[in-house]
Length: 606
Image (cartoon, rainbow, N blue to C red; front, side):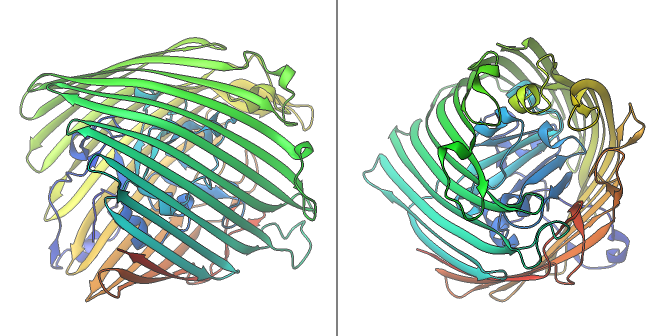
């Protein structure tokens, strides 16, 4: 059982003031997202959460959305249940203001201004790292609210197989094999499918009795080569196909995504140097067609291609000084589709080249200073500079104070520039984020408090009346927030709690940002009773507007219940009841969230 991230809040601490409490010391989980190289999470000068493979299995999450919604700072807006369109709001920023990567590489879909959170099955994920706050100096565009890095599995010698079933005709199966071909060559193959009949996600316009389902298939492979102890290379390929049924204002429609990618990386460490090279080519096709029809080329909404390459090196200049520098290039091309006419796209393909430098200096045993700077040169938008400076102070071995100031930007996606409300004169959105945090251990309770102010200029919004309006850079958003987190044991019961208090404001209109609440609370517990693990997950979200100037979505509280039984060292049986009190609520207006649902899974690992 692994609890390796600081996720929590200070809601019911008083209730446990006289209870028997035990908790682990400062977190030493190794992470890679903050600097692109491994480091203990306790040395990251930004709020960070990690979901390990064990955490994902304990949560029994069915999707990335299910997993991410349990983390502090994350809010979800989804048009119904499994597979339906979802938006992730990190710290109150727009859904397009979070950079989402797989193994450190941004997704091809990003050029269209959005991310498909159904794109990767959880059975292929090793862990998820989330950095809250500006991350643009290391990764470039999009990281205004933070960075989500999905790291895929790279198991040691193993064989695994899993099956599952549940409410609404849910079924899934997955298989994976990792083996050593020779002492220096390893091979990993994995695949799976998932499907559900779903339910009526939009009853206000869809015909009664309509079901909107989801189906997914995926295959992945990895060939590893390690000729020496300090040198490792990988060749990685991934393919997936998703089919989502949705309501097209009274007509049942299908949205299909076909995605494939192939990449290679090599890491070499010698003396004080650590170098990583990476290259990846990805392509994604999106189709939209009516139910009862067969997909044709005429139904192609967009076909996009992305080539990514990077080289990053870290040099240990002294025992207390580490220097990191990197160069990366992203080449994006809109190939075809009826969403945008190819001839309308300027600078197609569009290339962005970024260069960054980062320095970590342990000024003393208790003070850590970090500074970074980045320059991005974009074919369409020219140059853009971002920077970050952070200071950490270990007041005592049990308490740490840190503060930071960082800038970030978001280049407009092809959808904003050339879509139905396109405007080719749009400028990148820009932000400034100021942060201060205090974390430590008191009375065996691991806790942290973070305060931040994030100001976003040139905010891209739709102006005018439909269908004659268009996207404009006219607005400013300012998000002020405080995050309270804690983790602790009450006897055998582990607890993680978080409380997010924020004011997500559209300054230009003096109104609350759409689908972002002012209060969000989360509580996750788990306890081992012999070979059985019992867990609960609780989420509360206060009221928030459905859209700018629109009606308010009601507040809600939702509980999930999970159980896991280790039959033996190789077989695990698990079950989950989501929304156990059958709460009626919406995270997007007129799209009811799933009712109470039951799931069972059996996993074999050898």
